[in-house]
Every structure is written in C-alpha cells, then in structure tokens.
Image 1 (cartoon, helix red, strand yellow):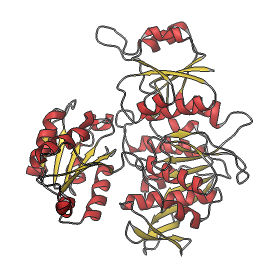
Image 2: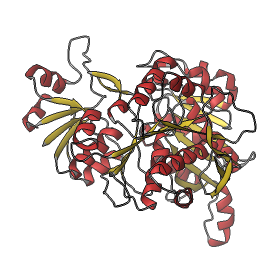
Image 3: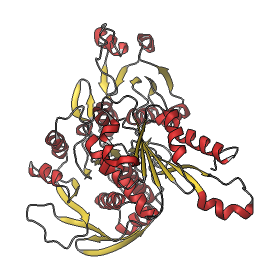
Image 4: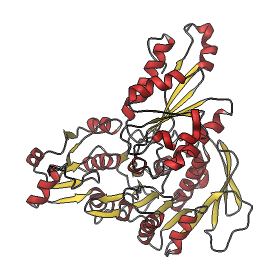
Length: 502
C-alpha cells in the first residue's frame, strides 16, 4: 500500500517509515522541525518528505494516512487549525490509523507472519537497553529486527526487519516500548499495541506531566502492558523499584524474573524475587544468576544505570535461548547509542603550538564536548554521576542543558534540578520557551548555575567559563540549535585554531 506518515521525522515514526519501505510499501511523509539523525536516515532511504501539514498533501492520494502523536486538533484563537491536513482527513472521511496500530497489524502480528516481540519499557534507559538487547541477539546469530528511538552504533540505523532463522520459532523483533500516548484519537500508551512475549520493565517514576496526572496513572498503563503478555511469556523486572512492585501487585499471569544490584539484605516476601544481580564497579562487574556468579563483564560503558541495563538485556536474551556467556561477549563489543555521551569533538584550549612535541600537553588540555539525550532529572543525575566516577573528583564537568520535553517545559520537575546537577562543577540552562523562572529554580546552586535565553548567548557564556581540560556535556532531547558545533567552533577560535579537533 501507499502510506503517508504525518510526523515522519520523530524517532518512532521515522523508524516505522524505514520498516514500511523495507516491507515493500510506498512511503511518503510530512513534518516540521527536521534535524539529524532521522532526517539523514529518511533521505538515504529515498522517502519523499513534505514540509508542514498542508492540505495540498491530499494530492498524494495514499491508501492510508498514518498519524504520529505529534498531530493534534489544536486551533489558534482565530480558529486556524495547526494541522489542516488532519482536519481535511477527518472531514473527508479518509482512512487513517496510528503508528503503533499500523506497526502491530501490518508487521508485528500480520496473519501468518507473527514475530516474537521483545519490548523494553521504563522511564529511563529504553533506547540503550533495546540497543544492547538487539546487539546481543545479532551477535548470537539470530538476526533480529528492531525499532529503537535512537541510532545504535553497532548497527548505525534505528530500525530494520528481522530474518527468520532455524534457531527461533518466530523472527525476533526488539522494540522500545514507550508509555506515551498513541495518538490524539487513542490515549492508550503506545506499548499496549505491541503484544510482546518478552518484556523488560526497567524502572518507573513520574514523567510526561502533560498527559499523566500522577505516578499512579502511569503504573496503571504499565499494568495494561503486563496484561498483554501471554502465560508463556516472561517479564524481566527491576526488583528495586517499588512502583513496579505495585504494577505486578495488580496482577501478573506470566513468568517473572527480577534483577537488581547485589544486596545482602534479606528480601521481604512481598517483593519481586531477585533472580539476577550485579556486583562491582560499572566498568568491571560480576553477574549473578540464582545466587551463583556466572560471568564477568569488562567494558567501556559508564554508570550504574548501564550495569542495570546490561543485566536486563542479558536476562531477556536468555528467554529466547541466548546463553549468558554469549551475551557478555556481545556486550564487551557494545558501542553504545548515538547521543549517549557521544564525544562530538575536542579543542586544545589555550595551546597555540600544535607541533608533535606539544602533543602530550595538548591531550591533557583539550576541552571535550559531548552530546547526551538526558532530559529528565533522574537521567541527568545518573549520566553526570557516571561521568564523575569515570573522570575522578579533580576533573571539571560543565553541564549545558535544555528543558525541552513537555514535562520539563511545564516546570513540574524544576525542584529536582539542583540535586540532579550536583555532579557538575558548573551548569548552564537554556531558558527559551520556558513558562517558569529557571534562575529561581536553580538558585540553591548559587554561582554554580547560570542561564541564557538563546543559543548564541549560551555559547558565549559557556566558553567564557571553559578552562583547559574541561568536559562540556550538552543535554537535550532535541537538536539544541546545533550548540555542539557552535561550542567547538567558538573554542577553536579562542585557541587560535582553524577548527576543532575531531
């Protein structure tokens, strides 16, 4: 069929477009605010994009319009529709469907072509854990398909179709299972459409304040996901999360395995059993299964949160027949995900002599600029703490962040920001578009927190405080106005160089 995708440049809808094209469908789409990596991926696939949501796109005459959750019935005070194409689709009675529903009916559970879906859910770590799991299955020779809200560096694309092998009854498909609502006409969480057989429940805390009133409302949605798992399916659940214990207390009809950081405390009889545990530092730790040490993982990925992500991925892979040993071998070669502490460049600030004799000094004086997707206070905190443990107490970390998500824009998480930024020496907040006073929210940090209302002012401010050897971490779930390249260019200018180091 010919499908026309509204909101095609979001990570989910862009991945869906890639899968639809690979399945033989004709795909076109429209969106606003296009930026890499999804725009690059769609262009490489030869998918025709139309800017905006204008009525002229009716001329495409697709068999079906697939609607992303960016689309709404919003109108201006003058009564002008923000998405006129959607209004025309409704007025003319043209066929339309949400992205998750299309994915389920036309790909994941197409009659006669059922996939074994492995879903990764949780407030944090979905993209990284999905990438780990997909890579483990690939390393094991199972050739999984996947749809991930980012670009795993081991694959360099966010989505692909699976290949059926003799090693599995059904083709395997790993999906990042988002709790955000499906569409303006379907307010259920996306993940209820996927009908998985293996589910990771990584963590659960309050988020998406624009659509959920409280944590209890999100727990109810997670339980809707649990209800879709068959009896022969398996839940891999973070045993340390009381919110997930409450989810399972509502009812669980499938196998359940818990994972946690090693603890010598006796378990309460009402808590989730700890079948999987980890012990040791993030870069070199032991994996325990049923109270027996079974493997050791040495890798370059930082952070306790990534230890937990890895443990969940190992447990989920075991459900489809991958040994712990093979999983560990795969993770030793895991390259992380684009925009997860991705080093964008370095500049030897304050060092004009770039000859070979000064190279050792240059290496110690380079200012490093990173890109990271963290946007929830917990994600910001765990990422910064992981970098702090890696670099040591003496290193200087400068955090440049943009409260861009709907939850952050509403200000419901602003009181948590000072604590989440504690591991950084200095923090810089981009305040454009906020309805709350960032300076007031960050006041407990004193001179360690600064604000700027536009990107150019932010670049000037950060560079004025940067020193040789600094680590500058830019955090946003959007393009952040290309701030990474602008910082590197400005720092290079200060250093008297033609351009930043690669």
